[in-house]
Length: 167
Image (cartoon, rainbow, N blue to C red; front, side, top):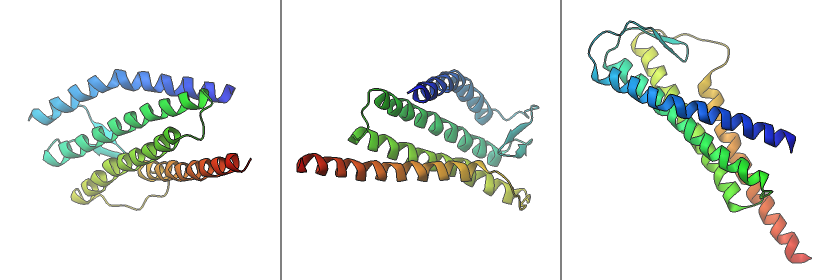
């Protein structure tokens, strides 16, 4: 239970920090989308440095922001899931639903961040082969893992119910 409490405290801290940054992010992205003035602060996103703000880069930044908001929304479901675990509610439809929802949100977030950056790299002709970590792969992998856990919990719930009926 100590590990669960530690994880919940960590997720709560990240959640609070994310909630603080959301208004700043919305203001910043809103300013960038409306403004036609050059922006002197370099922006680096997923390893790609964005210096010129044209329509393409504004759209990439918008999709990256949507990806961030999707991850924050998945943190909300993670908080709810951990709360259920603390209450010792494990094989329940809510747990299965939360795992599945978290998985879908991670996959959507991965595509919201990964695909526009890939298209942007094609447009600026900066395609390269990189060996190393990639946030797109991590997010999609975590999403699929969460969805698999959802299925495992669904099977375990069914087996538990069948076992209770036979007793």
